[in-house]
Length: 408
Image (cartoon, rainbow, N blue to C red; front, side, top):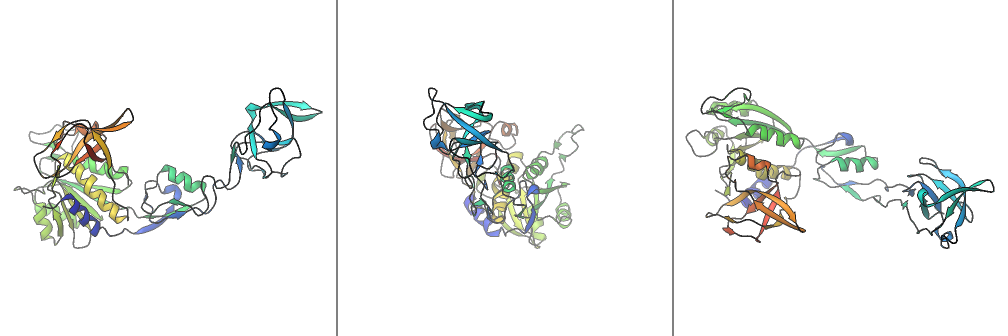
């Protein structure tokens, strides 16, 4: 049995970088960028108004007050997408301007329409100003958001809706990403049933692990296939391996040392290299990671539901990180507000809730830590990580934690 730190090293050593492809930016949601992306232009690309109002020179407004209102003549109207016809007006002249419209360089302030009074003087449209403007007020400058040449997407970064918005605003039509990793998922056990609409026979249980893993994969844009339930016999696993073309195969159950735990020996019969089997953690200690003769990866996750989730969160996800060239996830530090005691040298992943109280982040460890207890997962938001040599934790101790679900 190896430590969790050793298992991470082995996952990273074996995680060969995935193949890349170029795709349309609009179709890149949740994909992983394989290279740094640089902005091809300034954003905004020209100085523009942040308000509907009037562009003018601020130094001409300095004497404006309620007792000394200043009158500016409106010489033109600048709409969005319109190139200003004039670079600027003369003394005490201004331009009506719309939000997003280009501000002529000679102007250095925009007064919102709500702060002025419009009137007609000598047959001309004018505004009355009763307070001075602030220099550069309500002007969005070229490159103020993003300067040309700035990195706007990092290699290994997952592309979300905000990233797509930024790339679109910069006119970046395509992105280079890692190809979607393909996953096949199967559960083992003669007692498992996928017939959720039918009553269970005595001794049967509904399959919870495969729905968990399939949906964890789908939520993060993997191409995941459910391959069904494997009977407790070697041939079922052989058929699963030989009939699957996916890059990563995952099973749940049958990886411990019981009479019916056939997966480790069957993998050896198939010529697989078992990289590790058994990690000093709780829950999920019997986890298995192997490489098949054709180079594909195989994870044998323990059958208890929470153990399967641990297997995905703390082993499968780190392999993905390695295959995308991402750095390891960095846990956060939280102050404990509950007690916890253990009498072993195992690293524990504990269901816990993070909350904020008076500006301080705390972690409350759930009382329902058994690996068969699923409901607790719906009531927590983090995994508290208790190290091998941490045996008795009390209120106020600092612990490490990560979110319940990984952000790729």
